[in-house]
Each structure stands twice: as C-alpha cells, then as structure tokens.
Length: 586
Image (cartoon, rainbow, N blue to C red):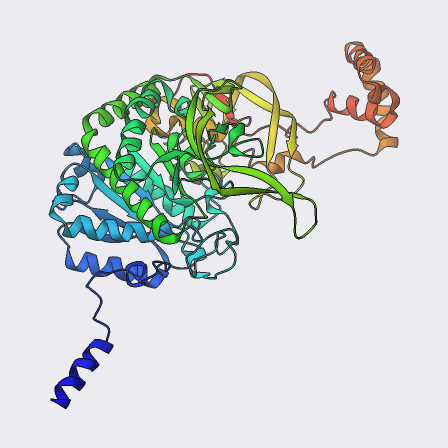
C-alpha cells in the first residue's frame, strides 16, 4: 500500500511528456516564450521528416549569419515547385517571419500553422487550393543575437532576437540595394515563386489602443487599376470579416501625424526598400500585419496565427478571382510605358475608421517634470477617425525601348539579374539614338542610413545623343522582354525614383571630378575661350544677372567657364546608364 502511494505521488510530481510537435510557446504555461533558431529549424526538420508527401524544408541560399535561409513548402499532394503549382491553378501564399526577430509572433504562429495544416483534416483541404511557402526566420543573424532588453516598449516574450542583422543592417530597408546575403537569397526565392500574396509579420511601435493586431496592406493606388480595386473591394473586406469572426477586430496600421490617433490614420507608403513595396513592383499584393507591442505575447501569437489562417482561407475562397486579377495586371504591365517613380498621400481623407482607442492626456513627467503624454485604459472609446489612403504619383517617366548598362558596372547588372531582369550582353558595337542624363542637383542625408548616404530630390538634364555608340560587352535591358520585372527595372535605373540605384549610391563615383585646373593657369585659357566664343560669354553675363553669388565670386565664374568649355570632364555627373531609343537588335 505504501509503495503504491509512493508511486502515485511520484507520478503526480513528474511532468507529463510534451505532446509531439508542441512548440516552446505552447509548452510555456504563461505563453511568453518564443522559439530559438535551433528550436525553430529543428521543429520544421522533424515535421518534414514525418510528412514528406505534403511538406518540404529546403535551404534557399546563404545569410550573413553563416546559416542558410530556409524555405518551407506545404502542398496537399506533393506539388512543391512553382510551375506545377501554377499548372494546378493554385495561388501562392508566401509568409516571411523574423525580419525583425524582436517581433517574433510570426515565427511561433507559422510553426503552429504548418503543424496544424499537416495534421488537421479540416485544414488539409486548403492545401488543395493554395500552395503555402514559409520563411521560418529571415533575419537569422538577429534571431541568434538573443536578449531581453532591446525592445524596451514591448510586453514579452521573455527573450527575443535583435532588429539588426550580423552587419547591423535593418533588413526591411534592404530589398532594393541588397547589401546583405539575406536579401540576395530572398530575391532569388521570391523570383522563383513570384507569389500572389506576400505576408511579412511584424510587431508595432507607437500609440496605445484596444486592438491586438493592425494591418498594413500595399497602398492600393500603387497596385494599378486591376489589383488595387481587387485588394480594396474583395480581399481586404474578406480579411477583416474573417478576423472579426475569430474575435480579433482589426484596424489599418496606426500611423498618424498628430500626437494621437484622432488626428487621422495615414496609410504607410512603403517604397521598394521595404518588403511589401518591393513585392508590389512584381504585381504581388503585400501585407505587414503588426501586432500591438503592449498586448501580452500569447494573444499576439494567437492573433497572428488566426490572421495567417484567414489569409489561407480567403485566398482559397477567392483563388479564381485573385489569379484572374494577377494575370490581367501582368498583361497591363507588359504594355505599360508610363511608370510612377515616387508617391505621396493626398491631403483629403479617403474614408473614416470606427477606431477603438483610449482617451489620452498629459501629466507631469516623473523624469523631467515637464508635461508628458499618457493613455488612460480606463477610458476606452469607439469613434470615427479620418483615414488617409489615397496616393498620387509625384514623379513619372516614359520608359525607353531599353536601358544600356556599361560593362564596367557589373555589380549593377548582377543586382538586376538577381531580381528577374533579362539582360543581353552585346556581342558587337551598336550605334543609334539614345538619351543621357547629367545629374544637376540632389540632396544627400547628412548621416549614414543603412550603410549609405541616401540621395533624394534628384534633378537631371536630359541630352539626346543621336549617334550613341554601345560597346561590345555592354548590357542591354529591353523593356519589352522584362515581363514582371519591367517596373522593377525602371524603378532601379531612373535616378529620380525614391529607391533607385542612384539614390542608394551605386553610381557615386560619377559625382566626383577626377581632373581639374590650377586657377592661375586656367585664367588665361578661360579668357581666350570667352573671346573666341562670345555666345558663351553672353551666357555667363546672363547667369550673373540671376545669380548674385555667381556675380560676386571670381572663382565661381572661373568654374562656370570651365564647366561650359571643352576642358570640362565629360564623365563628371554623367549618369552611365543610357536610355536607348533606337531599334533593338534581334
């Protein structure tokens, strides 16, 4: 009797073994734990080994951490390749997690989603209609740099990763410049799948409010006349309805210009440096779900899981309409000649949102004694708030027949190819009409931004070259041959685009003169040049009348003459990429 009682007591004190395929998040009774990198990849490896007919885990290229980027593919019948998936009429839902590993809800939610899709019969039917691709952890570097302090505003988990990667880059600013190996591997994977829907999971910063989860969709005007209305009229309403049914009311991402959300919510105009802005260039509808940092980690993971499931359910239900809209957008892109390069929100509200917030006020700061903002959770409200979600293009360009990238700029060609651009290498010289840009003026950030001194407000002079000569070995990017990459090509190579290669400093060497003059020597040459060229002298006199600084400065006038003389350096500020206007060789 005593032995039996002892055995019973011992069994009660011994924890029951964890169910197979339970996650660290589930095993924590407080639901305040996120998986480590080893736990995450180990979990997917075990799933793949157990369910090889419906899931594959593959290495998809290197990252700056030294660890490989992984690709999880889920399919009901072993359709693990893009072409086979498309042949069966299945849209691709591409989920990326851990770009900011301190915001890890998607990492844990995707582990749960993958397991449940493989094990629960009621969910398996969804994989007959949609192919799911998951990047378990994108910023592996930051995920390995685990701590519990850097997300000072955030309510859990107990430990998490760091925002920067191994090179201290914010990877959600790296999708055009692709400084990181992570971004280069992502580009290859994205171009391989070219998903219809892309989801990049995040956690918010900012105001306090009642919602557990908010949503940044691609701004619809940037998606064009087919995908934009589809997103606005069909996809978003279904997502919001699905989340309401799961008891997670959503709102657009809480970004505003005033002190509190009542000043009006503003759509996030994600340029191509961001994941969803990059995706939009290829007619992929992108989303950044943002859970609220002040809610507990458990509800944030559950809300993210339910949103990912809602995406899957919605894409499955709308698959024919989504595929048709995507195909029509691709056809329109193939015929497009005018391209937007920069965007701004209009000052007129698009609509109103019944916003669930908290009343805000001010009280003396315990640190400074000065007034500080606070939100009063004992005073919730629901009231209409203006939502600004209409954008207009602030810069556009008519694309040329082709762009010409000189052979010397091999790294530019490499970046273009990685992102789906088709390049021809000329086998013999070619002469014909073209246009060349000279960079007139631009602004540059006074401090480094993501490893670069970013240029903006670029102004160019366009000069026709009726008999431009292209050398053998130069690269020709013919617009008509680009397919889905056409918009990316234009955005990358037009200097005035927000995230052009020029803006990111790819061509900075042209902005420095390599030859110059000694003033006392050039004074006599300049005087002789003006004597022999009275029209140029008149231009100088006219310029002095409108430019007081020029009129007051002898050295400035000497420099003006130099820049308008045959002695000026021909390559200085000459943008090396030509806009080819002639016939394209077969």
